[in-house]
Length: 140
Image 1 (cartoon, rainbow, N blue to C red):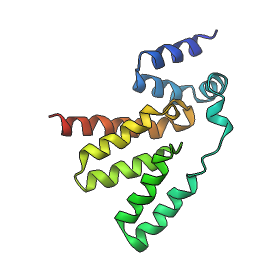
Image 2 (spheres, rainbow, N blue to C red; image 1 turned 180 degrees about the vertical axis):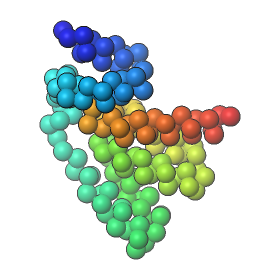
Image 3 (cartoon, one colour; image 1 turned 30 degrees about the horizontal axis):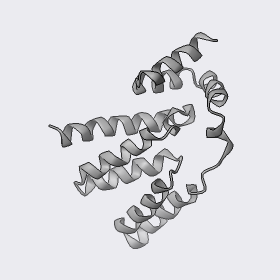
Image 4 (spheres, one colour; image 1 turned 60 degrees about the vertical axis):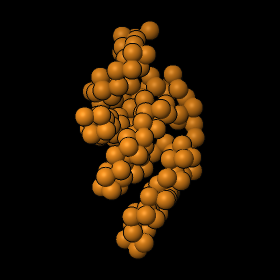
C-alpha cells in the first residue's frame, strides 16, 4: 500500500478533514486514483439533481431568494453530490442570519461521503471554513 494511500486513510479515520483536503489538493492526480479505487461508487453515478443548481441560479434573478432556497433544499435533501449546492444554500441562510440552518447545511455535506472526493476538495475546504465560522457564531 502506498504511503499516500495510507496517509489518506489515516486522515479520514481520524476525521482530520482540513489536512485530508489539503493533501488532496497537493497530490490531486494521485489522490483521485486512490479514491476511485477506495470508493468507486462515488464515480459511478452522476448527480440527477445537478441541473437544480442551474435552475436555482436562473430563478434567483426572476423569483428571488426564497425560490432559490427551495430548489437548493430539494437538491440537498436528495443528497446532491455537488458541493456548490450546499455552499450556496449556506450563504443564503447566513445572509438571512439563520446561522443554525446554514451550519446544518454544511454539516450535511460532511455527513455525506462526497467531501472525500478530491475533485471537490477546494469546495469542501470552503465549506469547512464556513462551518467553522458558523460554529463560532452559534456557540460563542
